[in-house]
Image: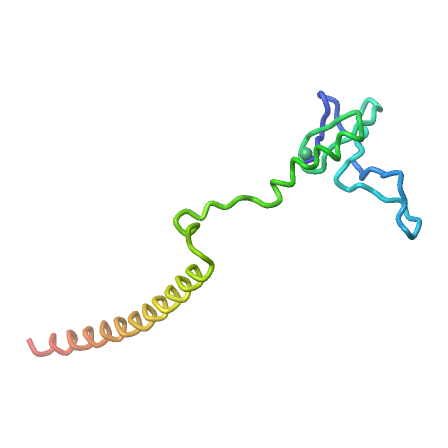
Length: 128
Ligand SMILES: [Zn+2]
């Protein structure tokens, strides 16, 4: 998150930075990830939209933003699944679906058998 204090001085205003360029329609271009921060003591510094990095030099923010590119595509450790091809992973998912479907079917049969057994027990209780 963007810095809320800089060396103990509170940030009182946080806005996108004017890139000093205009788009084709003539509108000013704003850098959303480079924040212009006004401090409680009146100074202006520049900050990163993603972390508390700040600098007096606006030009140091854009190179800093590259640091966050790796964050955008997090690496995922797939464990043993990491060695599978996509086709193998899809086949395993299909197998999982088949087994889960069978399990639901067997659960139905088990519940029905429990009910039948319960009925038999109740009937036998009357006999003994
Ligand atoms: Zn940053």
